Length: 407
Ligand SMILES: *Cc1c(COP(=O)(O)O)cnc(C)c1O
Image (cartoon, rainbow, N blue to C red; front, side, top):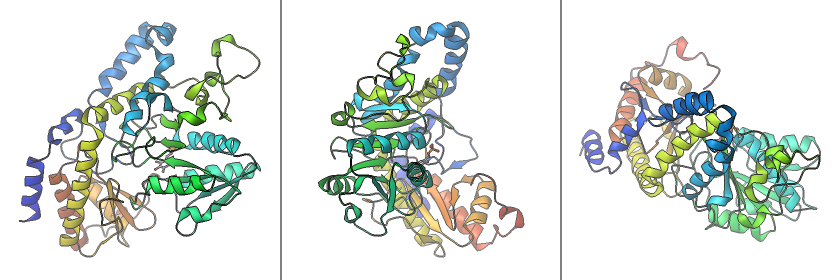
């Protein structure tokens, strides 16, 4: 069977084929960058219009109570919880992933007095490592990068926590979360999982693997919109013992008592700092509702089929590109990354022709397969176009080599 015929057959058999209608997507675009910025759910614009004109415009400050704005961080967190294998009171939506990493690093350090080393991987997403370096500059922590495997070999009695990204942003390679968590905990340290590239597309079972802490982005597979609030997970067993280093009034036990002394709120609420961004949380809730309605098992199953089809079609059609994502579906996230010396120019040429993927320095072409709105025909179209752009050297133009501010 040709790849084109196979794509048609897979689309016809896809139980999620009509889910694309839940999103607003331009007709002439094949969107393979939902791992960087998820598409716009159809529910979002009307919801935001209502929050702006109704709740804000008419309700004014009364909406903090009447429209339950004040409970939105916990409410959206509770909806994210089942998508990542957590209980509703273990997740809260707030701040950015970067800020939440900082808060959890400090929380982990306070749970492990006498230990001050944070272990991470070289090549981890930069903000994760930069946050460790910020703490180190204040003299509060020491960074150790694990140059080799297994990671647990780098954990000794000085290590408070290990900070890892579950799905690597460049390769899409997944860590074995259960095995790493158990091995690190056996050496007395805690694990902070960054789920930015897995939440919403990959099966996750934080409680099942006895996770300690996790964070993740709201604007990738959760479709919360540009700069959406992130989420933060703290296992119930740790919540009473941790402190939030950004001890703001929204994490206080009684914010409207306006007391001089900080007293942390019970439970996950203590991880809040300032006033929640209501517009962003409302948009995030629409994105999360959309994912939840489709269900992670169906999304994750389709994701594996999509990436498998794309990788086989690439191998059969574009032999000059090297695939750097895992060949086996088990350790592969919802993306496929290809290596080519002209990756940046090729990426720009593809975008000009309606196939949107992205580029990661120095030579990676990255394609995200958001199972909710990407079909097998889309995957095949991208492969055909990529082959055409490479064979015809259509990317070989000076304007395709000029780097934009955001890549
Ligand atoms: C996208 C991403 C981030 C982004 O963090 P922000 O604070 O939202 O900018 C952090 N970590 C990982 C692993 C990511 O993929």
